[in-house]
Image (cartoon, rainbow, N blue to C red; front, side, top):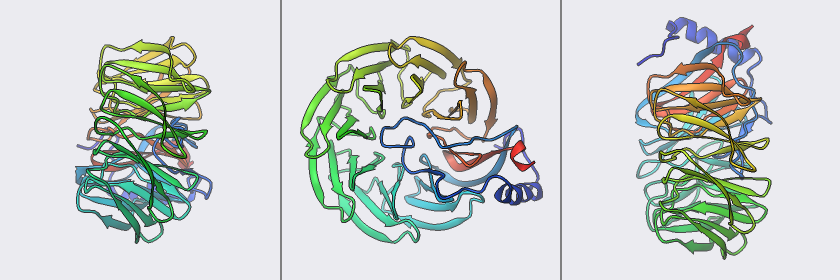
Length: 374
């Protein structure tokens, strides 16, 4: 289960000590505070990524799956299917605290100020003190919450398996409004310019007024919308189980273009500098012109892709079900390196401080670069 660059335990300890002190100290401004990096879900990371050959910095293993990680002020926060949310030292993987819910956690946490927000399959949305893990409040929905919350302007926006989209007061958890869809909601909301964009398994992508939850428009696709939309330059991008990547007008919901892959799209798109990046279940990573949907390049991995890509400093990072994490040039899709963590990677990577953090089926992994130690 170890990757091809396995190191003796003593050397791994030395690498942790070196990387923690030389060029890889995470500063106060280095952060990935929520799923896909920001409220627009662009997938843009602060970076930098690993320099040189990839090496394993640390790993934390359990028998269960981990969510995508967020990193704020040198601390990594992640949910786990063993019903817990963990706070780990981002440089060493050492546990700072854990908070147990009554069921597994598939929701990526969001961090705003001194509070961490997330959902659980026990039907609750939680708010904790990010320094101690102590409970501040919880809000009970009608079913499991696997959705990753987005927090903007003092409001927590989150969907649930009860088919509702909720807006909660970030301070106390009081419900501000709810919007009822026709099926379960697994898509994480993107929130831009006072509009909440979110998909539902009822086959619709919705645009809602962030202030009161009123529907602005809806777009119907042939299958449920469980991926999370990304927003950039007046366009909304999302992938469907029907195998299409859609580009919609953000103001009206009118379809601008669609791109066919022939396979369901589980991967949520990233959009940076006028290019949309995403993966298909068949294992292909695509880059499209955001304005037109024209293909720029594609890269074929060796396994199914459920992971959502991110971009830092001109490099795309994405994982696949064979356990590989790939680094590709954003311009051409050329492979710079790949690194196998030994288990399937279905999470959205976080890239900050010279490290790539990924969650997978059985662990959370930190991948650094050989050049960072020089």
